[in-house]
Amino acid sequence: MEDAYYTASWDKDQRSNLRALIIKRLNEKKDINLMLAMGTWAGKDLASNEHSIATMIMSTSEPVKSGIIKSVDDSGLDHIHARVDPLRFERQIRIFHDMIGFKKLGVAYEDSEFGRAYAAIELVETVAKERGFEIVRCFTQSDIADQGRAGESVVTCFKDLSSKVDAIYVTYQGGVNNKTIPELVKIANENRIPTFSQAGAEWVKSGFLMSISRAGFRPVGLFEAAIMAKVFNGAKARQLPQLFQEAPNIALNLKTAEIIGLYLYADMLAAADEIYNEISPPE
Image (cartoon, rainbow, N blue to C red; front, side):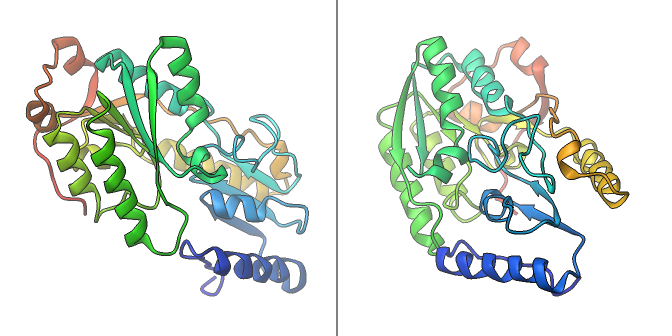
C-alpha cells in the first residue's frame, strides 16, 4: 500500500507521533493485515498489546536484549514475530579475536538502551571475560536527527581509540554511514588498526579489514517469506519459529591488510569466502 510506509528519520519527537498514528490506523481503519517493522525503533514501537495486527520485526541486532521479544522461542505476544540469531555477534567477536589476537578492543557506541543493543555490547563483554582482552569504550551519538553530528561523534571516537587499542569493532549506528566510512577507514588504516565490521561485507569492500558476510539474501528471504505465508494462512505469529542462524562466511579486504601491515597466513585466506583486493568508496 502506497500510504502505509512510515519513517521517523531518526527524530525522537517524530517517532512518538508516528507510533500513535500507526497504532490508531491499525485499530480503527483496519485496512492492514500484516506490518513489517524494520529496525529496533520500529520493533519496540509495534511490539505491544495496543494493537493485534500481525507484525514481523526485521533488521534488529538484538531483539531479545532490546526488549522487543520475550525470548528466542517466544515473542511474548500472539501477533508478534522477530527473526533472531542470538549468537551472531558473539561469533563475530570470537572469529575476530581468533584471527587478530588483540589485547585491547575499541568499541564506539551510544551509551543508551538502544545503543548498547545495536552494539551487542553484552555479548562483547561475555567474550572479553572469557578470553581475557580489555574493552576500551568511547561513547557516540546515534539516535538523533542530526546525522552530521552523529557522524562527527564516531570520527572523534575513532581518533581517540586509535591511540589506545590494537583493534576496533565497528558497530551499527547512525554515525557510521556512506559519508563517514571513508574517513573512519582512513583513521584506522593510518594507525594500523585492524577493524571488524559488524554490518557485513559491504563495509569490508569499503575498507574495513574483515566481517562476517551474508551468504546471499536468498536464505533469509525464504525464511521470512515462509513466515509471511503462514501468517496469511491463519497461523499466529507467536507460534512460528524465530531462530534463523546464518552461515559464518568471512569477508576480507587484502588492500587494508597490506596498508596496516597484517600478514595473512594461508589458513586465514583459505577460511575467507569473500576477498576484496581494493578499497572501494561506499555506494
